[in-house]
Length: 409
Image (cartoon, rainbow, N blue to C red; front, side, top):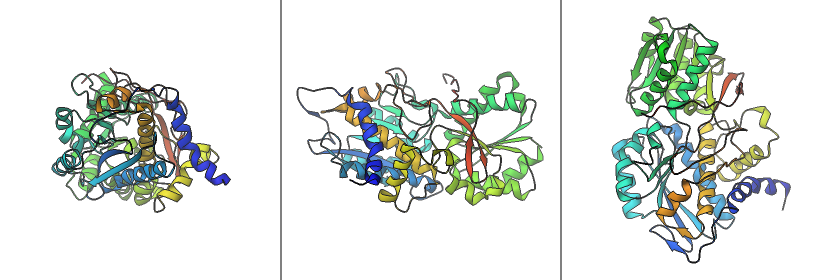
């Protein structure tokens, strides 16, 4: 085996070994619909088209990862059948595709469905059916509600938690600054906004304007002009990639130079910052939980080397600068660990039991200090992030790994 092949195998092997010690030995094999001696069916919906199509890279990375796993013999001898459909970031379409996956394709579980609106549309259905809705590619706080929705678990750091982190940063580094907010007028944007407001607490008067846009709007240019008229010193952009790029570019076109903050879901160099113009994004602030493939500090990192070699072989049209690929990859790695941990008990109940018992998992492409932990009363796998600033053509981390305390609502 060549040195390259050894490195390619490193990440998968390392991830699997994390779970081997906790894999139970079962007296007999147990299966629910979607699992057998030879196969595990995973259902997925992601916007390969529509206004949030930039996130389609998440599904492409996951398809590539499971192909790599299958090429190595699968998980506990079973191949992964990853069935991924396009929902175009449309809730009605999400319902249609999910019903098809659960009732026609008969998947064991729904894995990494993307977006707050789509997951909200299928939330009650999945729990009524008692089919796991696992590792959602959305950070809405409501996914961490094991008491009322025991079959649903998110993955990304909570949007409210992230919003609080930005408030902490602004109160410390930009005390007294006037803040303007652009947010998507749905659960996604409102969750972020709540976190920011809660973080400011009694200093919420720092926010001088909050303006929302609809996902169906072609551009947010008019909203940026409106926000500029309020003359804020800081603009917080709670937007998905397309609209985040538009905002950064429009602010530059107006000759305006406020401090700008974008959420971790819109930090892709390839999908957001390059279209916005690197020169327009200098000094941009955000927070993230995973390593950035464009950051030179990781060039000799074993996990990053393995990741880039994985992309070259299994997602050859993928741009390493697209952070959505990294997101999809990390979620898939966690799913592989979970399935390994399930052993030969591939019932839906055991899948959820094991998902609620992930302990101190350190994946090679997560930031140092960021660990995956769950419990029967805490369905938030990741709750740590680190601030970063865009300089040149890449993000530079600064400060310590932070944890934003999240409210109960």
